Length: 462
Image 1: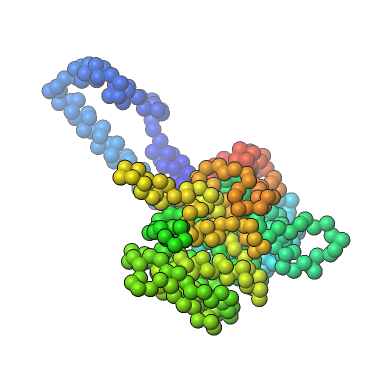
Image 2: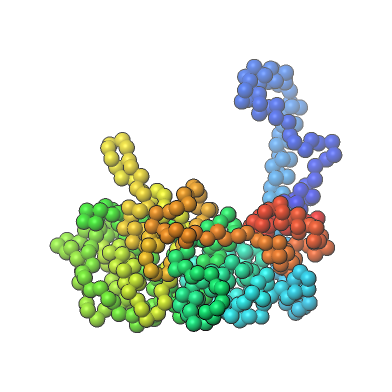
């Protein structure tokens, strides 16, 4: 976009005698002074045809120039991106371009996330978009999608912070692989990923889910935790005292089934109490039926299918599923929630109190959030904060979260930033002749290691 704006400014360069900033006298006279406006109108002759001609000509010329600029803007941007894509295809045949800082390889040759080591840090790992969509059918994080689109390549930087997160859960499931004399940090089953904006929390969580599923784990991944507290229908359940959101419940069950269908068919249910029914999405209560029985030979797949098929049972099935996941012993289970901070503030819903007032409903009052929010258990669970949802600053000691579970994700280090900048040069996001060590360091310190800001500033190198 910045390149197209610069091109448009060059093509539509104003005359040397024209002011860069237009005068603000007319707008100020309209906003603040009616007398000045009358005086200015009085100076011009009412019947002067020249003034009318000039005004008409000026208006048409400005219209033509703006439309021409828009055409050049869109056409120039499209042509540039198309040419860049063609050059990147040609660059694939030149391995000499895949060089990072200090002559190190820019891309790692390690085939999987499980085999990554410290030696692979500060290098990029290539993925296939089809493979990512298969492993993460619930959806990719916004930051990952933007990175792939801007760089025109599905590749991600291998960071030490991700390896630490992965190894933490690996030690829990497979402790014999670590020597008893090794000074490994204490493994934590519950982690909350926090940190500044655009430090890679959501991407690290998605990569953790990718790794866990490659290892054969059962993972419940919610990449949009905010949707649990916004949109759809909401009803007060008089029996439980919580608010039911059947639309979100059905979507959660469908997403959980996308990747885990075959695994769920092999896991039997451990709880066979009847599922309590609530109000369906827009259809009210089911007449004459208060609960739905679950056959004794049912699997978790049958349980999820019940919630998808019957909207009245959707919320009850999600709450029951949380209890069932705690009882699974045949396979490691991980609960991964992005935008986790939205569960500690108010939801979008309101409860009428009087004719003229409403009470905002807190997220903890929602049945599904109440079932999944707590980390005071022995199950493996990761929640990632998303500051892009702007819920406000939360206190350090969160309710239902163990002390010390909060982990701050760092922004790019100087070594990581150097690799990122060389990668963007490789992907022709930066002109190679304008790139220098001094320039990328200026961008790094100006953005304070913010990945999104660095990607936005680097094309401005001149």
